[in-house]
Image (tube, rainbow over all chains, first blue to last red; front, side, top):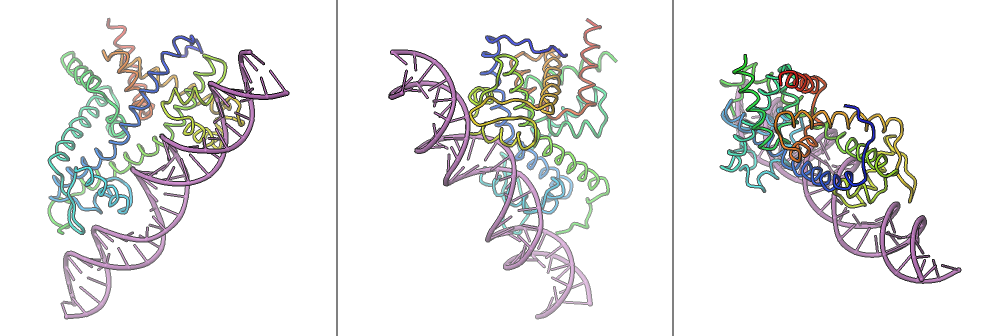
Length: 153
Length: 153
DNA sequence: TTGACTTTGTAGCCGATGCTACACTTTGCC
DNA sequence: GGCAAAGTGTAGCATCGGCTACAAAGTCAA
């Protein structure tokens, strides 16, 4: 792994444009992460206890209720949730579908890490960060790998 | 609202605590991402052209030079880089070792994705986001998987 | 009904990361 | 030496995601 500093100028110049694009992608992904995590949590709360309240979300996300309130306001601007003062929070169709996609992806990543031998708790933790940065191609590779691993066992 | 009714089981409460911890981990990871990306880029620039200048960093990261200047100021507060006005940027020993670790990890993730059949450009892009969220255990699993794959071929 | 408790909202602070516009150094060439 | 271009720094703005402290609304039981 440790190939010590062998960078040609030409290669590095070409790599710079690529790097910049990659970093830009990461920044873009970050902008959506919170939204995805919130709609996912909201969907889970609705499924498990019938409604999503600010306090429950705050506990699920590990932040104060104030942060939740402000974030929910943003999600409403983005038409992902519907909320009225002092009422429960609901998902719009767009929010619903984002939540579903996010959960499926989350579960795929967790299952994949588990299949690699990562412990349950760590898989869960890592997946939470990793899932937002996996392209469809990478997710497909994960799924394929799990199928192969299964048939081989 | 009927919080005491039905579904607020011990299991879901426990899951919530886990989720909150995972989200907290992700937030903590984000705080270090930029620093790691910067020192990595600085190390690459020094290796490839002898010094790291603000403009080059700006191009590598895909941001304006202003953002670079401010970020470098923060990295200097954190004792990762040394910089003087209108001069090139250098890494402290701490910055150097962080850069090395980051690059090794980056390369491991890229190689792993490649070994899974992900194309080079996408592997590079995804790795940029994924690498910051991989625990040692997950990285070890990646390395192990690559070894297995290799011996099997 | 009323009063205590819970929940939600608001005000205002902070730091991080972006940006544009403008000012100042450095550099390199004539 | 002097000037123009390139590089770097500063001012000031925006957004986002944290927070504490306090205010207002809802809920529930006596």
